Length: 253
Image (tube, rainbow, N blue to C red; front, side, top):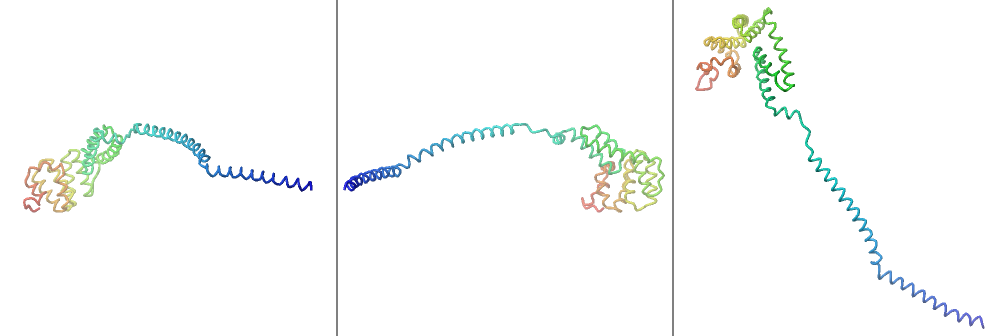
């Protein structure tokens, strides 16, 4: 009986303690449901502070890079030697003389070509000086053996005659060119050279006759004569104009 009474008195106490625990649990659960933003708002604040510090470092780094980039842009470009030479008026003048020398060289007017090449050697461009020296050696080689060679073929006589013309030795030039024409009467370049020699010695009628034969044998000689300084002697002669420009005023070549 005593045990039963004790049990009955113990049971209501346990029930009260259980209910108290449940009430406490429910209270805690209710708080977590009703105030989640309070707990969650703490973490974003911490992240925001960290993000702002990192962005500050990023801005500082970007400013430093931008400053370095501007400094690089302000640095002067390295000088270019080739560009300076291209705008140098002395080099331009030297190039013009060199081109004139090459024109004389291809016309086999070696004496005059040599005179122009000598002027090129005095210019500032090393490249043009090297080119002029190379052609100078060729000119000297072609001029040197002219007095000593013993021509046999029409081409040999022609080359010697042109060489004598370049040296201003008119009589020897005519002798060689006449021999070349006798051996090759249809060689247009021989008649053309004789016409040029006639102009240099003041023989207008002979020059016109030889030039007409050269053009009849090869029409391209008409265009060569238009730009050849050796025919300056005939510029005022109407026959020369008619021969070189047959398309004008209805002239027939």
